[in-house]
Image (cartoon, rainbow, N blue to C red; front, side, top):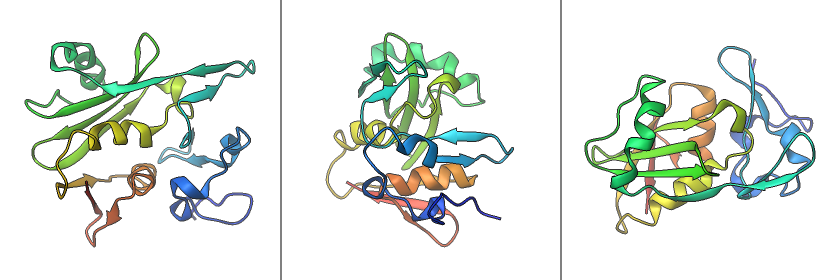
Length: 170
């Protein structure tokens, strides 16, 4: 059965504009992953709330090619490679806490978020960094192997395709 929030809404019903901008939304944005673990998604800010109540900031930017080696081991840690060509956006606070890649094969993946920063990183901001580098009319897709990844693609404003591939246009 699909996870529902306190108001009976399914995760697929959420888009960036539908979620409260207050920090109280963190508990409402916890959805079970494929293995039953909870994950949190932050959709509204580059700020995030620490368990001790401190507010911290993640910086979102395009990762210049000369810094791509910083992302290589992180991507390899979950079976992905650095794209030969493409764009990488990162969320960082001295260290990379999340990566989103665009490949010239016109699909948007992978996305990786440091386990300790899940619920603190805003994947929509990672996505926006990449969109700013693309020409108008450029089409891209996301392959969504899990409910969590489908939800994130939807938060990017992508539209589902009949075969679970998502398409976005700049």
